[in-house]
Image (cartoon, rainbow, N blue to C red; front, side, top):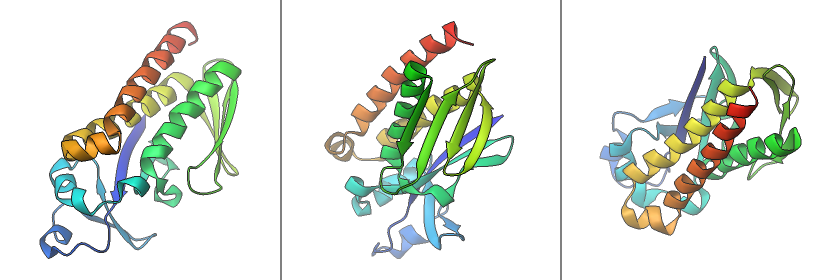
Length: 186
């Protein structure tokens, strides 16, 4: 039903041509950028010294029955975007509706909880009516998987310095809150 993947853009200034020719680097034609999926932890290890972790650009692919909801078109600071998506969800759980903007661009996201197990998720002027439980689970699993792969693929020093471990812990806490909500409200 839902497919979720996280990608990080490959910096252009990598002096090692072997890294740039590695299997697993994809070209994103619409952006004329190169990216890797975060699950490619071997390549992530090689890229670690060249990544700007204070400004980690990438994108989330989120599709519902192969219809793109999030894609490379909505690239941004990927770690913060994952955090914002979970915060959007938590706030909607509390207030029935929530609005956030992307971390580094004026792209508006809105999440409204509807009746009968559905949510209305909007980005700018695009709207999707999605099954609440599956959508929330896809977001939680996507976020925790992103941080888990970052922890596996980066040096311990990088993980600690840029708080990827804390991001994972927060995602797990958010996961508990969301799962508790879903048990009572599906």
